Amino acid sequence: MTGRNAIDKLRNGMSAERRRRNEAATRDMLREMTLDELREARKRSQAELASVLGVGQPAVAKMERRADMYVSNLRRYVEALGGRLEITARFDDTEVAITNFEDLATKETASSE
Image 1 (tube, rainbow, N blue to C red):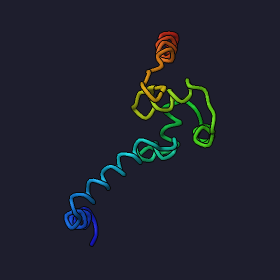
Image 2 (image 1 turned 90 degrees about the horizontal axis):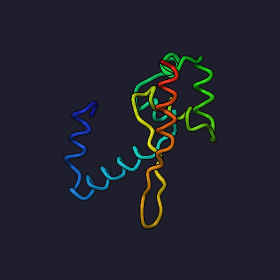
Image 3 (image 1 turned 45 degrees about the vertical axis):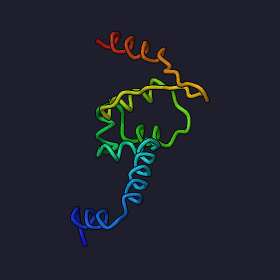
Image 4 (image 1 turned 180 degrees about the vertical axis):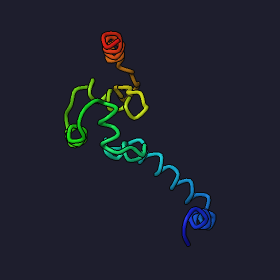
């Protein structure tokens, strides 16, 4: 078995419950990724991302290894991959979108034009 047909055969042989659990596990994995996993999932190399960000490839490698970074750098990284960074605080009873970083993005865009 190789390729897409093999995956389809395997999936078709599973119970509906097993397929549901697998789909849920896939969604969970996609919700939590390191930066390098995110870049690879978007099919981009460090060199390509570095070119978009206007930095060298070693700078991208360093960003991907960091456990702590500026929100502005994280936002630029995500935007270079074609995404939009949203920061949400989660509490037991509610979720709140933190929006003051969106103002920063607007100011940075205006100042670079």
